[in-house]
Length: 244
Image 1 (cartoon, rainbow, N blue to C red):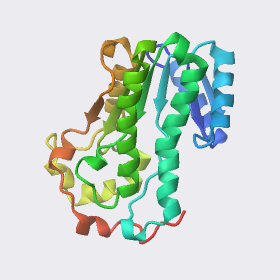
Image 2 (tube, rainbow, N blue to C red):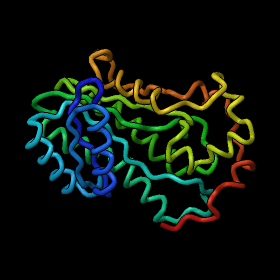
Image 3 (cartoon, rainbow, N blue to C red):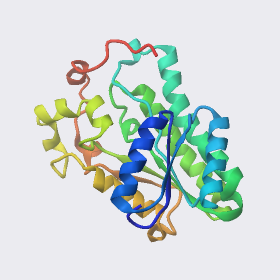
Image 4 (cartoon, rainbow, N blue to C red):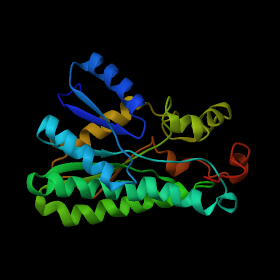
């Protein structure tokens, strides 16, 4: 929004995005339309896209950021818990991308940025559900980039590392990592911050990356290359079970 975009933010919780919208408008002076959406239900996506096109007449950029995650051993993970994460992350990304393609991108071009993760690169402990979901999205990114490139649609992924001040940081052991000095093994010696992810997303969404498609940009300070994949350490902060 600070770079001139009018935006739509969408969530199942309309009250939450409405409150966020007011803050964003006050901070930037740009328009922000809050909408209710469940990425698992394509009909809600269709309604939201119709509302956005009615308001703004165009959609140029789609950021797929819906996700569900928690720390849990595979042996304690219920069948429904695994399915729920796949439904939100993987199916949600496909559903939203397909609706945007049919409603606008096919005829006008556009940019899609999928927020993924590095979990599957080494088989992160306690993350089989999210790692599988995000790995599928990275594959989807490449497939869609190939198929939709002729329609002038670029599709890329962005894989953040540990980012301070986020819900993921709080839920996935960020404070534990800080206390145990685990960030010292990251090449850049620290967690990331939200502004760094914003700038990286801005790059992928803007004409600065006009010849970039079908790739995953890892923004993690080199974390996945060097951070320990310690199952025993993580067990202390994991859910003993997850039955969603």
